Image 1 (cartoon, rainbow, N blue to C red):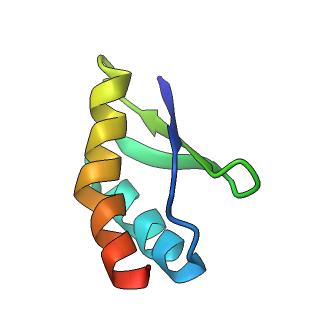
Image 2 (image 1 turned 60 degrees about the horizontal axis):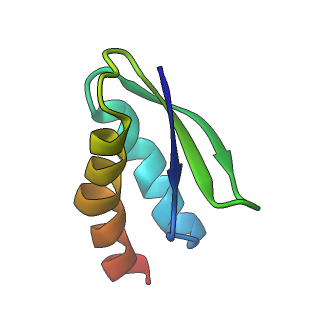
Length: 70
């Protein structure tokens, strides 16, 4: 399934790093990033809980990348 995740991260370098991290997560691929809307669309192979995936990306990765790239 596909999950749309609103991102607060706007820094291009931070987004590049996130784009490298996401495909390393088993069963996921970066499907689309709408920069104007600030929305990342992921394809998740075994999607059961969209909210859990959104929380994981935002809390585990985006929050930390924002600390680094502001």
